[in-house]
Image (cartoon, rainbow, N blue to C red; front, side, top):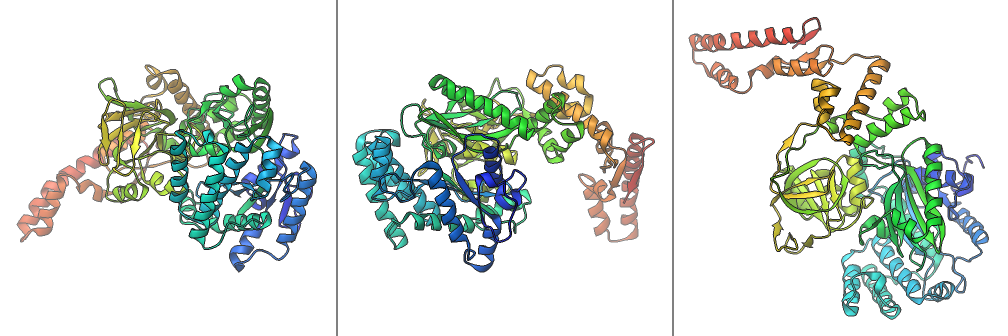
Length: 640
């Protein structure tokens, strides 16, 4: 493998290294690592974050970058035996963003770059499938128009819906080749009308525009929002990954999927994921078609499934953590498109850290480092109490656990506005996309009628600690009239309150009562009390939290004191392990009914009225201090 070189902006996958994430981004570094592990990865190359930084600083790509890209394309052509732009034997490429940190706010993937009015015929001949070739071309036009040229999605979506209606089919994969050929013509018309220029027929120009669009996406509003939310520096820039296309939508024994080496919602030690036969990867992530469980691949192609499981085990052992994997099966051949350390819920973070420690994969110190205070706080949020009397509306997939209650909102701007006004919101969509990030951040929970446990909504919700239920396909969402309908005729309108359970996938009408979490009960009463009536998952979680908190006490250098202003706060802080009170704010003793006494004190017209107010306040405050110091008996209290 080559070392990093000054002035080198393009690295083939076999040149990179796992720890070069600053230079190659997380996606590029991991593609390089898999390639060098001997895992089947479609050949490609990564354009560095330094190239992006240079572009953003000067407004143009670095002088040597184009020549380096051309050389890298030539290397890929030799590797796969196809030519970029060759009308008889075309090489097609995908373009994906990839910063050091995973960022849902970045540019969407563009697939099938290199298709044009000539190469589409060569692709059809190579595949022996006209329908596949024209479907790929119309996908490129749609992705290129929306993602690279920034055109609105509506004209493309409308044209596709018209085409499906004309044939009386439900899914785009059911469209005939002639219909798809007509759809590409309509898409080209949309592009020319929207951008003022025809769709570029030159494959190299397509690639150039896609690369620059990835660079520009670093500073989109949704990328900035996600960086603020996750405290990611704004000067890192993004890498660009250019990869040979492999096709899960080429027909028999083909498909695509997303898999996790462990269950990312609970931490359960099982291979977990979604699979779609005869589909491209974006179909899984976008949630356009509801997915099948990963075991569906075993039923279709046992050899590919067994190879996938072997690779998943190999990757988890290599990365020593939960891995998130994207894969494609092309006519029985398994290809790995991406891996990364996977996002997980707070519960999964504690359970996986505990499991890996028990398995001897990581040390106790590493287990403590794998979790954080924000995740512990999420585990202390309330859960639904008895749901036996709740009005069940429908059930979807349990995508991200927790209890969420709020008013239904169907659009991101309305969800953000309602939240800013102090209302709790459930964002309801057919499927989410990166433009919905602000709404997901604002909402208490997310409910979608499409998509699986690895859809955009599910992955982003888990990363942000939001409750999500996905693929509730009984719902029919009427976006125009801002309501959703259920098979029994019931309608739920914007502003109606619903409750969603991300652990079971249940959706209820109205507000379901909540109860304290088992983790809070653990801190209050200990392991045995919290585990007594709990299910197996909850017991495992409580024990994982207990072991990691005990290790944290063992390894820590600092003590922890609480903010506590009342006897009740002091008692709770002591039960939860605080070693004193670092700040007791006396002004907080004058809230509630005591505020009226303070108001009388301020508005007093003479010394007698003022003294009367003092006389009422003094014994109350003295009693507070007495009880606080009794609760903290033997521990320090700092009073302001």
